[in-house]
Image (tube, rainbow, N blue to C red; front, top):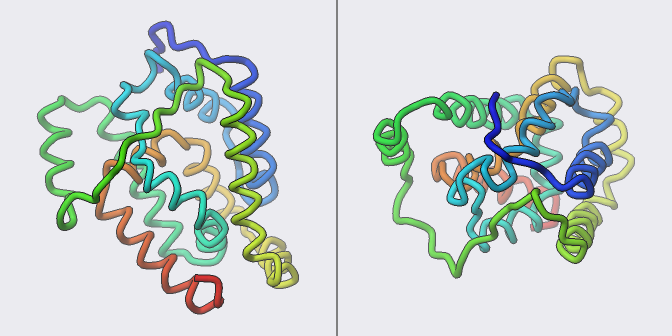
Length: 206
């Protein structure tokens, strides 16, 4: 993969690597090369600004429901497969023409466009300490929701297979493609929302 002057900030890259290691180090086979490529994609001159943008409401939702999504990736083959397919599609679109991508995006529409108050733009060519602290705090807050299930959670982690770890690792190593899938693939986003709602209701943490 070629990068035209896409240079990540060293602190920003270290933060992403540490964050992914903290949450996924024991359940996912992270590919260091792919992860670094995605850090570059998160910089100016990596992905376009549009492809580095996430609706504010969607970003808030993903932070809030991170723990439930995390559980889903661990325990549900279909849920995990949907993530892999969504990332595969985004990678496949990387070398396609703008008109082809536009047509695919049109086919992926799932009802009216979600309203938005604005966008969060990812830029790993700069390190924003306040933003990094906010991300860490919000992820920890979400994980606190499943703290009452810590015993069951630890048992699930012990049962993660190599195949499961490879699938999760593929999705997380390609985190910029995954983020783009959430923002640009309404069919995928709405499927995830439906599963999260069902799981959250079953666990009593919706």
